[in-house]
Image 1 (cartoon, rainbow, N blue to C red):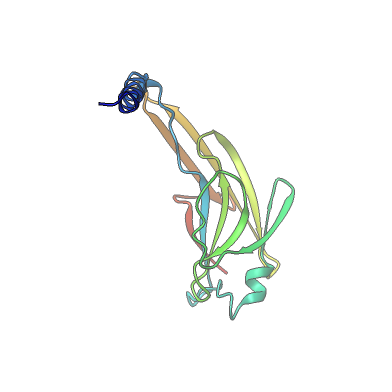
Image 2 (image 1 turned 90 degrees about the vertical axis):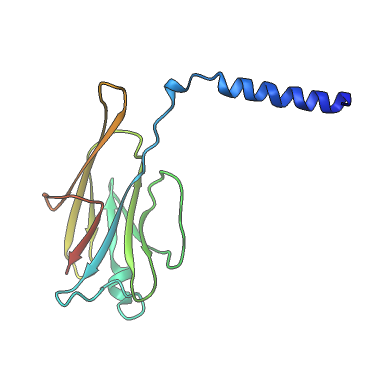
Length: 164
């Protein structure tokens, strides 16, 4: 074994020792960000987020959060991933089967009664609110409890269908 190979082997060995000697009891928890997936249909169950035939409704909709109004971002075909940064409202999916994504909020911290308003292009409004609470049970395992409301009425998931 040459001296160069010896030092490579030594460096790799030290890296393994350092990695395995870390205290893994204090690992950080990482939770999914809070983000909403909205499907919007009419009474005949037709998707209103058809950006080709219903462009005025789709792109006339905004979201108000923390006093700022966010316009729809056209993200059709975009496989957006990443981060906990609030981006507002995005149109995702395809032209015929669009869906709104609204968010993101950091899932690793507690949020209490965070609310935003959807300002529909038809002049109506809906308010969505959520709470994200992280607690730890007796064994130290993190437990995330998320609650959601639409116009004050509780719902069970970040995915919802709104009938207009």
